[in-house]
Image: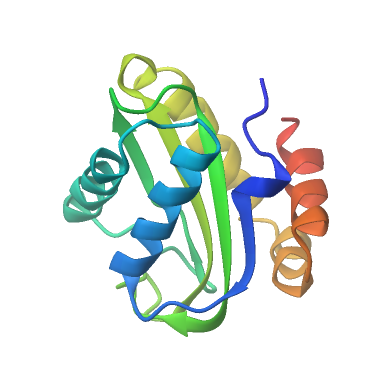
Length: 150
């Protein structure tokens, strides 16, 4: 199963806020056949954000959504040219988004495994630095896949 494909990665993108990022995540998800209904994807991401911020440390955010409109587990990555406000844990602007989309039926299994793998990966400084320095979708794809074992 391809959880992350190069076409699910957007590099050096510019968005004004979190809502625009969520809209782009939904559009990429539909184009990649991860989801069928973009508004459902956006709603699931917003609902999770209301439970508590997904803005972590050092400019990284891990928004995640679960929905019956999501067909298969998928990761969507957006690196931002300029940071945006995300109410991150350290107060820093977010420049790198790793979105996890999970079918509703896999909420307790795939979701937890994938989230813990991504969180562990992003706790490693060399990986975070490599992701921040990457300038192509191919580079980001290789870094993520080699470290997630996807």
